[in-house]
Length: 468
Image (cartoon, rainbow, N blue to C red; front, side, top):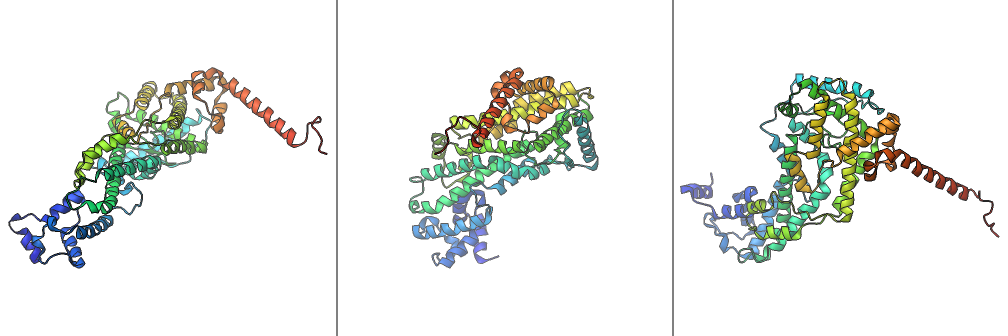
């Protein structure tokens, strides 16, 4: 132990420099000895650092020291160069599921595999879509987090980036006049630190929300998005806990959930444009994202810029997203419509395929209520990023697909999913019986226009004026 360390450790004396670092950096404070050595190398520190008093430090030297501090903080932080610390988000998500996440045993994996294989066979009679050809996965909660995190990033990054930037900018705007005397010239050095803190803070909140979903989600695609990619997956621990509140045999619940999982993956593979349009709607929404500037400034005004914990408390649990404008509302409406159409189709197809299950009707109602209302974790996620993953018109969409199946057949129904331009609108959900006739009229009008255009290009109009 060094002489300085002995002096600082005697009689539990407080270290002024360490106190200052904790005020500046909270739980991520650099090691005080490293800072002392850095300051000694700058030639600005007096000999015998045990008696160091930060309040007596020259402001110019403090500016230089802050640069050293920031460098050390950056070395500890994520290598991710974006405004949101996604490494920290992943850690927070994993921490949220830790402690209640037993590994999936061989028997549970076999049960999941059997259920998914059976679901593929039963769906062959209910839909004209092809089998997925995928191998099923039984995931623990942590495995679900790790396997879906890249797609959560893709789903939320446009929104998260806007929110993180707005938070850090608001905090920077509140700094003048709040810093201790003699430190006003350090604003430029504090700005990167606040950006880092903003990214870490939002990353932790987002990771905690995703981790909460990880303790609730039953299958990989339950959110309606292919959040697990093109992977058939189920989370046995969550399914077991969910089944504890139902008067349904475990095997029937597992098979029913497997039918829904396989049906969604079949649809996404059958219609590659669907995934593209879902994410495009999110990007369109995020592009026009506006922040509640007054709300952020009000929260930032209550922050002690030297106390990161006060920043965490001020910005946690509150949405600072302003009301969407007309363009954003259109994007959200399109997103909700697509999610409703997906879930409505899944509901109709699975209802037919699940006919052999005695509990099918009860499970259908239970899952539709769960899907339409969402749980606490889903609501927390929605409040954080402004995106609701639940379809508001699920029952209307199911009624639409039931009518199409009855009047036009399964082949017609599945063919609609091959053509983005033929997707039902909100008006079609209001009047499903008239969809096929409206579609034929639209197709006939389009064909006639195409024919006239071809005739024009081919010179097929005899009365057209001749050149020259």
